[in-house]
Image 1 (cartoon, rainbow, N blue to C red):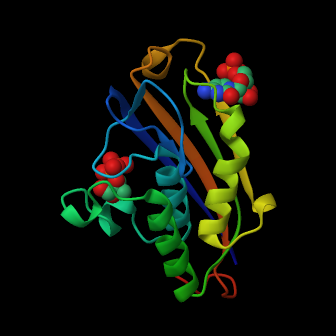
Image 2: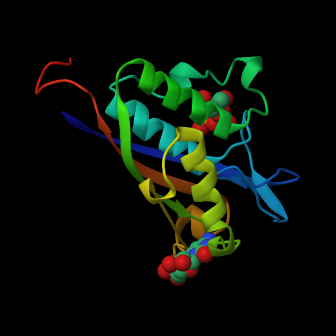
Length: 165
Ligand SMILES: Nc1ccn([C@@H]2O[C@H](COP(=O)(O)O)[C@@H](O)[C@H]2O)c(=O)n1
Ligand SMILES: C[C@@]1(CO)OP(=O)(O)OP(=O)(O)OC[C@H]1O
């Protein structure tokens, strides 16, 4: 049976932090604040996969109170989520993500972000969609206070209809 999952995440922008999106270190005066590398799009994608698995969320799997995840490389955490999915009999089929960011321009980094996320999940590049949008200067994204990301993922649970809880 095909399962759908959705993920959403927000991180605050702050001077002196790296901007890491889809595993790409993007040159920018300000980066994203978080316990991990604060890779907002990779976090949304992990939550989408976990949602499709009905397996909670990244905060449950990787608590932000655990020093093990301080400065964590979120792409490595994505590999772990994909491995967890495989170990439970799921196959990640397809996913699509959107980043809300007023600045910087992300288009030049889009293909490398897709590649990093696809590689982390063991998927073809074509199975990972990624877009970016400004919010036309509206809201916290528009004021450059933070960035947000949404993701959806389709997983095959390997079961006949209705067999999983
Ligand atoms: N941080 C961003 C935001 C947007 N883009 C690209 O620009 C296009 C137009 O954005 P609008 O918000 O004005 O619709 C968008 O479709 C993206 O291709 C970007 O690269 N980086
Ligand atoms: C992956 C984690 C690990 O601390 O990253 P954070 O940078 O804390 O980001 P957030 O999206 O607030 O919560 C998810 C956490 O589990």
